[in-house]
Amino acid sequence: MSSSTSTSERANEQHLAHVIFIAGAAAVGGFLFGYDSSNINGAVIGIRQQFGVGEAVTGLTVSSALIGSAVGAWFGGLLSNKIGRIRTMQLAAALFFVSAIGAMFPFSVWDLALWRVVGGIAIGVASVIGPAYIAEVAPPAYRGRLASLQQLAIVLGIGVSALVNWVIKDISPVRADGTHDINGMLGFVESWQWMLGAAAIPAVLYFVLASIIPESPHYLISIGKLARARKVLADIEGEDVADAKLADIQRGLRSETKSKVSDLRGGRFGLLPIVWIGIALAVFQQFVGINVIFYYSDTLWHSVGQNTDSLLISLVSPAINILGTFIAIAFIDRVGRKPLLLIGSVGMVIGLGVAAFAFGHADKVNGELSLPGAWGPIALVFANIFVLSFALSWGVMLWVLLGEMFPMRIRGAALAVGTAANWVANWIVTVSFPSMGEWNLSVTYAIYAAFALLSIPFVVKFIKETKGTALEDVA
Image 1 (cartoon, rainbow, N blue to C red):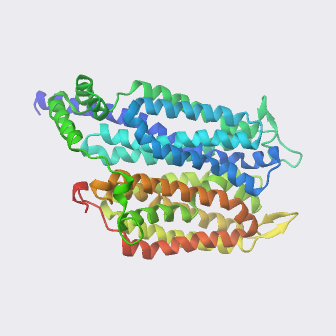
Image 2: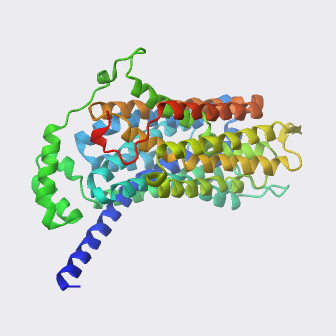
Image 3: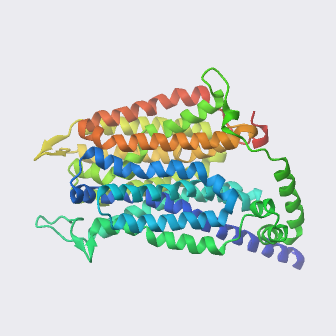
């Protein structure tokens, strides 16, 4: 091997390491997306006891973040075009920090809900800016794998929030019956308040990392800062290709047309058929009830008799979610999108169906639900079969398909509509679960299983395989 070849390989490795670092730094927003959306899980029981609220108000409080998320997702892209990707990330980090501190010190359940809305806006912005920035800085050969860092960061955030909540509960004051009291004082505040306030730490890290990574070359070129854009491109892909990449981006920006929501009109029901398919795909992903596991699992397992270890048990689902995401990343370009969706749907039907049947055997003991005998472990196992099935399919595939399934001329607007539909469906499920679960937990899970079952013919009939298809060729 010649010395020039060896030098070139080392240079390529340095460029790749640099790209991985800046993509990973941007993906911290995804980590906060997962962390901030699920850290309420461990605090739900404490909030309910502290403020003396019922199931309906609890559902509104937990789901209030999703209202902000829809707003943040809708305006995040516009904001990043106005002030840049880096400043948008810094703003999201600041909102994450403020919402964490505010939620840690609420005066009532209503201002807690308001701080959750602020955090939700940050989540929505992060859900848009992270993937957009990574796509703009990643070399084409590595774009798919680097883009997957965002989804991986989200599930890691969910997992770490469950771990932090468990640690806080484990050091909480102990009641006379030996259980931990998250309404007990831990220092100068109650334990559940630490669960919400802990999100401030990764928010600070996100702000710091966002401040040291480079601005997107696409944004720099769009505002006329060509020299800075060329330097970023040289650092990312090498000095020898920087000028060619600069010219390619300039040509792309000149020919780019911004799609509008009005471009989506058409067809029998007011929107183009492909847009309705995208909306249905986004709604199905939420109507199977996945976020019930991540927002309410501690309450759920507590309600069926797993009182002492309910939060520890809740750690299992995020770990399985992470495993499933790795499986999806490994097979998405080998097996394809549609087969993984179908495999996931079948697994979700089985997991949800058996869990619903198990919950049907719950008894009321001293006013609380309890699963007798083996039904508790059965419910736990099959609920996590559902989580694994979701994670290796619909959890990743929705976002991949929303980015691939629409023609170029409507992609931006259609993606915004699909994302908004996903947040609205998420809100509906989240706000309704406490009351539905209180009414009949078994029937509630059976309803989720029914949507998983309906997703199978939907995928077979309406979803086209996009594996290996160039974005420009999607009609």
